[in-house]
Image (cartoon, rainbow, N blue to C red):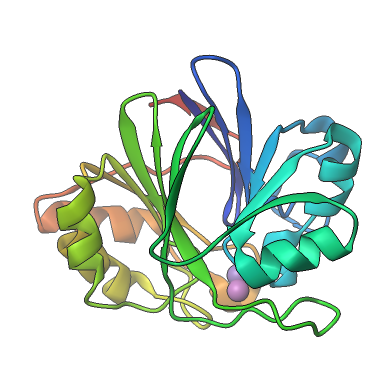
Length: 225
Ligand code: NI
Ligand code: MN
C-alpha cells in the first residue's frame, strides 16, 4: 500500500489492489496542502471527527466520486443526512471492507460539525490493510489506553498529532509513541496554523532518544508502506 500525506491530518491510502481511502481530507482551506480537492479521488472516506479541519473537502470529493463515508454512528448519520453513502460504525467496533479492516478507537477531543450539529464521539482508527497495521489517532490528548491499542494490534505505523493547543504536543506525543509502541511514528497536525506550530525534527529526535523510529513525511509526499 501507499500512504500520501497532504499535511494536517489528511492522508490518502492506495491499496495494492488500487482502492483509495482518504482520511480527514482538509485540502482547499488548508494553507499547507499542495493538492486541491478537485484533484483527489477516493472510493472511501474515513472521518475521525466532525471538525472543519477534518471534514474539510470530504463532501465535494464524495459527491464527485460517489465515495462511501466510514465513521462513528452520529457522524455517519450526519453524512447520510447530506445525501451521502455512509457505513455507520462506533468506537471499539471493527468491520472488514473490500480494502481491509477498520476499527474505531477512543480519542479525547470534541466533534461538533461546522454547522453546529452533534456528531457523536471523536475517534481514532486502526486500519489493517495489505498486511500492515496503521493507527491514525485523530485529534486527541494523550491517554494511557494507547498502550492497550498497541498491545492488541502490534502497530506498524502510528500517525499522531504533535501541534499542541488542540491536541497532544511533542512531549505528550513522545509518551504516546512509547505507550503504543509502533514500528514507525509519523507526526501530523502541526504547522497548519501558527497556533499549532511545532518542530517535527525535535519530535523525531525525542522519539529516537526513547529507542523508537520516526518518519517525517513532507507535505504532499507519498511513500510505500
Ligand atoms: Ni478537531
Ligand atoms: Mn484538528
